[in-house]
Image (cartoon, one colour):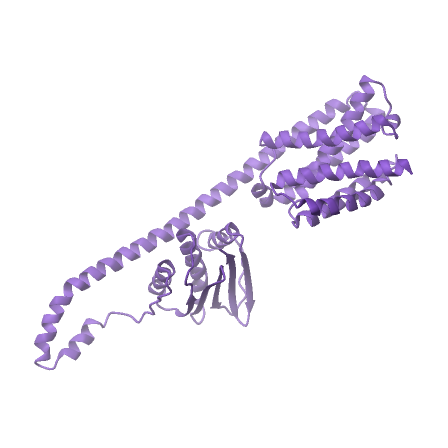
Length: 411
């Protein structure tokens, strides 16, 4: 009975170390009450699985694989996130390294054999604490040295990062299990080489992904700046036209007074305003939204727009707001131009929630790929980046020959 309680206690220490590591790397605190409830419960599950470990190599591999999976499930439930598997695999990698390295060092220095070291004793208690503390220390040091990539970088190529961890993890398990018998004098060298290669590949992969992200951000920034530049050019042109109109008004007034005497003013008015198109002027209370919608009407005169705007009280970053609306409407108009040229724009702000819904006609379901280049794929990437920046939600639906972009952002 004492041995069972002790083994459960060892598993609980392991679970606490795993929880701390995940919290540290995710830079996210979890409620203490939640940990107090879940950690002891999961320690029972961990004990039941880990307790099945035997000296058989394949059974050992299977048990360790199951532990990785259930560790992942535990962290997902605890933090309510699914993008944590890299950190779980990272913890497992350094845990297995610490366990076997410490046992190997003790065997060399003091002469303990593996069975005695892992048996129920005061040495085992010290070992458990050392293993978990050293595992956490190794990971923290790697993070401080900026070897562990950021969450943003990991999310971009999460499969590659996880694959790298898992490959090194199983290579290390094989080295320690087979090497105990055949390569006892080379274990330390092999493991250190393996860790060095892992750090190298991890750093190279991180740098490659960071460079890719940076290049894409520069391209998207350039596209956003082009939109703003286009808007400023349009605004300057409209201001210039307004100045010309104000300058000409007095002349037109004199002409009208002269024509009034001859009853020919109606024909003159028609001639003056003949070149002015029919434009729906939006007065939503937000000058940036109004300007965007007016600019797009001028840019796409063939499109029939349906506006439903209610944004009183909206406070939002002007650059992000205009970039978001410009890209959404451009995407819709580019598709609508191929068909019956209808675009519906609904923007509402209520209870600190910004809702944007853009509809356009499209008889064939489009490919929402982000790999089409400037003006297409990057437009969608800009939309996604802005929505993610404000922790919003983006849903793209297609039904009844319509593409519908739905965006919700809490402000």
